[in-house]
Length: 254
Image (tube, rainbow, N blue to C red; front, side):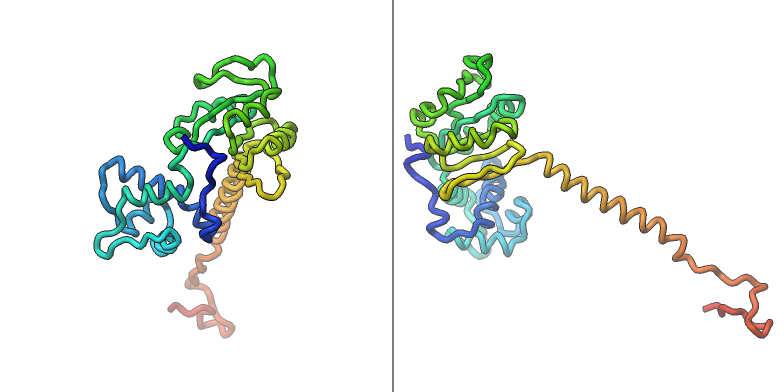
């Protein structure tokens, strides 16, 4: 079986924009759901709605793959699943190591979606000697002293960092030196890597802070509306209101 070290996706050489690459997994998830329901074809409008994008953008994205669909029929679901999976490099086995087996690392190890998407957790690594040998998700944890040999023996090119922030850069450096060229970073810190190494960062606290900003803005807008509403009601003239001559209302009724 091929490993992550023997082949890399051709998206860059074929000139597919990074924004399009970022949307391909969304399309694949929607298509996989359709395939599981035995839906044979799907229109661009239906697929775009399921993926949360507009149909024009979807058609443009698929044009980079050489897939244009059939007028009046739509896209063949199974073929698109294969086409996108191939473009993302998911038609082969990608061994992955997870470094840092605390609560988050253990949760990632137990995530069942890796295997179904072409990723095999080859090893779990932690710096705590007390963790060595303990099974997590059926995989015995190994000590960080063995990191380099684990990378080499398993042909690993993708590493997941779930360590505390203070340890993340050192772990990153060791992974890169051992041959890892793609890193998914869950540590709350920015990693420095050499050219040729790709890093994707996942920071849940940042996402929550962004949501908090939007909630605060919505609350502020609602408060502004509530404050402005009484002032917007125009005072109706009373019968005793008089103009400068004493006999004409200062505000004439409409």
